[in-house]
Amino acid sequence: MAAHLRGADARSLLAPARRLFEDGSFWKNQSDGLACFLAHDVARFYRLPLAFPEMAAVAPHFHLKPLLPLLAGNGRFYVLAISQNYVRLLQGTAFGVDRVDLKGVPTNLSQAMQFHDRDEPLNFHTRPTGPGRWARIFNGQGVGIDDFKDDLLRYFQQIDRGLHDLLRTERVPLMLASVEYLWPLYREANSYPHLLERGIAGSPDRLSDKELHEQGWAIVQPQFQQAQRDAAALYRQLAGTGRTTNDISEAVNAARQGRLEFLFVSLGEEQWGTCGALGERITVHEKSEPGDEDLLNVAAMHTILRGGVVFAVPPGDLPGGTLVAGIYWLPLAKR
Image (cartoon, rainbow, N blue to C red; front, side):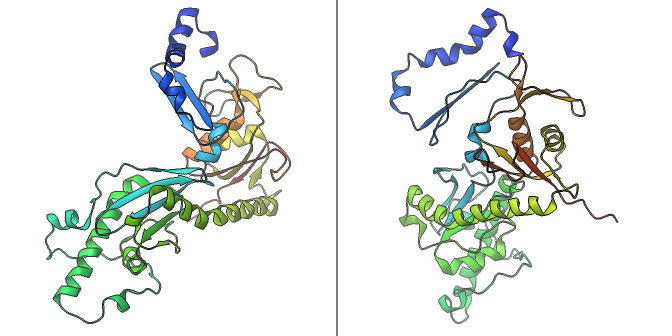
């Protein structure tokens, strides 16, 4: 483990970080927080819009728990900005947004139609689209109107197919930013189950990424707060039924097996210990010992990686009053 490296190996591991001391440009462009991750053949440095308590952790896995407000499902959302001229996908948190590199997605309507055969049949999803303004915008019939509607639908279907590989394992809200009359048509093409009913109305071409973030966060913030309250209420309702745990060893094992739907962890506190191969006994220590890692970090990361939702909350705000609180997935019905 890293804690038992020989001097030469330790110096080699830390060399990328030491070189930063000589990089004046790096220190001139800082944000509220700085996260550094070092391992063999890995050196990553992130300026982040979140202030962290100063700490260093040497463990078998990267210590990501301080980043949970940025990483966890209770803080992320996507904005899909669509116009006939431009497509952007932004991934946001309370602190800002970043553009997502889109592959297999047309950049505009003209590109989508460039190699398209109009005789190709359209595919429709069966979910209801709800009321919209399409009919009021495109009144009447005719080849021009019908062809334009079909072209837009094919454009949206291509976007949806391109997003499928990117979002297929996500449970994060996605909202549209577009002129409002396009929303019902995009819903016909959409296959992502977490598309919000509410979106950002108006031409997104006139809005910067920062403006889209501000309007998007105003929409999703109440939803995130309600989701956390709902999960806490569900924990209290299910406590004692076998569907919850506030034991750190049980939570770590369940998270590694993908059995946790929701997990609350306490920010600013650690529970040190060791966990070997899956199924082996987990050892919990009062203080950090050589080879230990924060078991709250282990449980949180495995919950996120296996499709669960993590709520990182201040100490004392966890349901159950401990450092961790988990809710198991509802068992599948037996056939």
